[in-house]
Image (cartoon, rainbow, N blue to C red):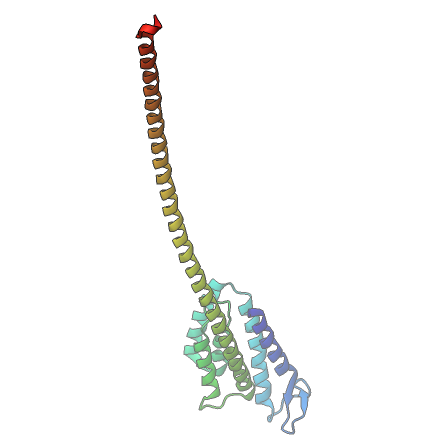
Length: 221
């Protein structure tokens, strides 16, 4: 998702840098002609977009821990100047989806301040704020869907884990029962062997008695 978001932002910034709309609806390059009193603010806005592009590349090079530090620094700078460009900088930082500093709600709040500011905001920065706000809302919805799927998957895994643990307990009880029955069977076999030996002994005694009686009878002499 981060790569997709980066592509959208870079495409927008490139478009803002390369073209600008005239009142008659025609498209022209922003680099054509020189800045005059009439288009000075327009060039100023595009210059700030160039700075935002550089800032975005800077953010992309930072690690998660360093982004945390940059977030605090940017928040302090915004508290000091409280202007559209610094709101955009912080909003861009907060919208990085793979950052621990991600905070879509705060980013949208900052962009809404740019869009609803009672103080006039440069049209280019306003347009960028509008696009970035729409993009963040889109990614926020996607994240909510992903989080919902992740939550459901974790619930399924937890349920399967509980089922597995229940099955293991049942198997353990079955194993214990088998061991108990095996022990009882061994004991029963031992008793049977003991009884069989006693029976065999009695048969021998009985046989010896019969032989003795036959030997002591008159006809045997």
